[in-house]
Length: 139
Image 1 (cartoon, rainbow, N blue to C red):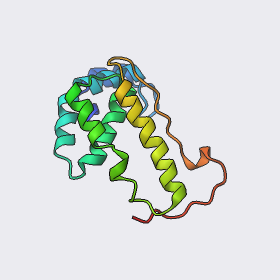
Image 2 (tube, rainbow, N blue to C red):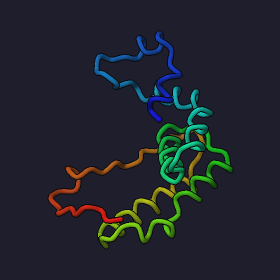
Image 3 (cartoon, rainbow, N blue to C red):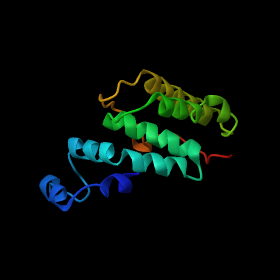
């Protein structure tokens, strides 16, 4: 999805906003690219082989960048992020509980989203969680 957004930028925009670090651009610049490429992003999501994942990623994009979200798109994102469809996919209880927590938080953010107001979505990584024993996810 990042590639789709970046292709909508002009050479002049890249020169203007490039700050010396490869691939790091100001948020307002990337927000503009997401808004400009919105129709292409939707086309990608609708044609994706895994629409469940694609709609969830689109939701994160929309939330992060304050992009437009019609009621139809909101409903599709919510439909593709229901807990009932995922609850039996993870074998480990801890993984299930963690996934449920994040998925329900995501759904609440989508339900309450106000267009034009970007939201900071937490991105937790192993280094943020301290020392924990991780087991492979068994589907």
